[in-house]
Image 1: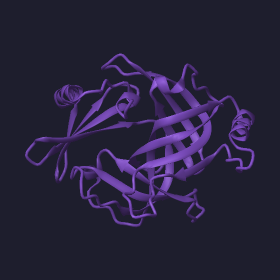
Image 2: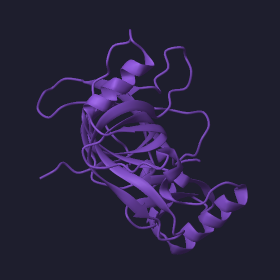
Image 3: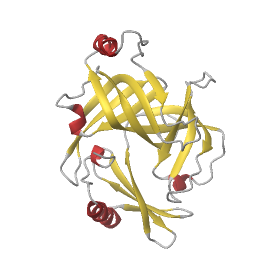
Image 4: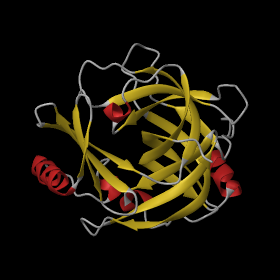
Length: 250
């Protein structure tokens, strides 16, 4: 499993990457930016790939994203500057902020598949983001009671984590590189199977209300272990976060 398979793309070998990149280049939508260009390929249902081209038109990377119904109000604090990686990659430090409350709920890090599309961004700034969480591992429970019983079965002394909670796991206090991962739990608002129109493969999607906002969760079907996600379920897990900046809701 990898972030590509979370969206139904077949990606196991280097040849798979090259073949997929060629398909994106030929069939995607070109978006020119100051440092080069992106080619956005939509595979149906919200599944996307963003191919990166440098100023010479050479492919230098490709990132997945899922465009869904998630929405979170955040404050962008600063940009993560990396020594390695593509010049068209982008990662930001942010905090979640409830509507009209003027307080910071928690900090986290997320990646943008189309960083250069936005140009210079003044920081700090308030913004809305559509976050897609790609599941590294995931647990699904029928309700909050089942979720609490599961936690008690794991430890009789640890505090019960609320059904809506969010913890950034990518912020390193030991000087290591900060990465765009988080562990959260939430209530499923909507869910279903989505077909990748390019490959014909299906993946699981869920719109999850967690502490701080609504997030689109995507998962490889092998992670669900035969149990579908349904409206009203509680899920928790660890995820990679990909986001796109969006306009404020009307």
